[in-house]
Length: 173
Image 1 (cartoon, one colour):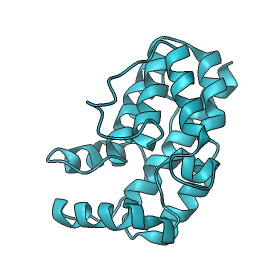
Image 2 (image 1 turned 120 degrees about the vertical axis):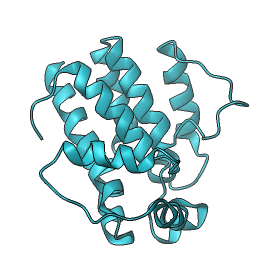
Image 3 (image 1 turned 90 degrees about the vertical axis):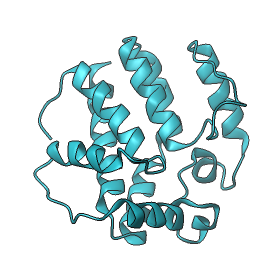
């Protein structure tokens, strides 16, 4: 991946968060945007197939596949572990609050966490990003599990792209 400006990194983090969220009507367009960031060309799937694969790979039964997109599962070894409280406290400490009734996903879902990193980057809070990466330490293992669990390479590519951005941000601190 070419060297990106901070503004481009923000856009890419939001894009990766969308790719790792449930596929909606704009999903195929987002996949094309992600593909433009790499020299790789991926097999194209229709939205219905991607939605069914997303459910199969990321549902609660995905613990058998080890593709659970929640930090607590990776950090604590179970869903809704202690790390959720720590992540909520970290969000609040950085001024990121939300109404949990309105939010569809838990705070430790990968897409929520990537949006948070993008917000921190928008606010140029590099130290907070560095501190928050301890809650993203599981992404390498998650990437490996995605490679084994699905023929759709976009999910893995989104994680790989995210890891490259996070590593480049760590270097800037």
